Length: 193
Image (cartoon, rainbow, N blue to C red; front, side):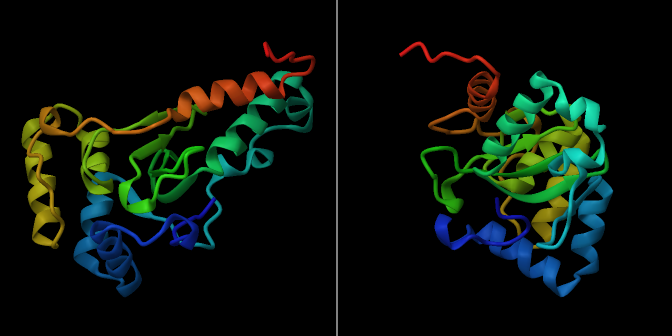
């Protein structure tokens, strides 16, 4: 699972992601302020988000529970198919869903891995729209303000409110992949085939 970097296995980044990484790497204050105002930060390759390290918040007894152990296996399987690039102030992670079909980075929909261990595809034509939509929901005024701010930084933000966000186009659903992985990892699982 790539973290804050481009994995060549998924092809070149979109123009939006290229700009995100260029601004992150240059330490652009306006960009960092725009992300921070929304409660986000971009990840670096050496970051260690808590959600990706269950041993940091689960006790040995919890990790020994078969149901929890199966969930950890399933989460790891799904996360291996995501390129994570952002984290919010609630430890939720955001990235590009490649899925089992290995969708290229430039075409991959945006996925959220939340602090409850759930996966969801987000609306938006790219990471910036998805992050704005996830944070402000249906507050049209706040959405337009943040969209304008990012547009001023060079990002193409077509939506001006939550209702204009494009639905994700994905061949697979990370939540369904998680559920299937969980069932496979449970002790005694028998495949219906």
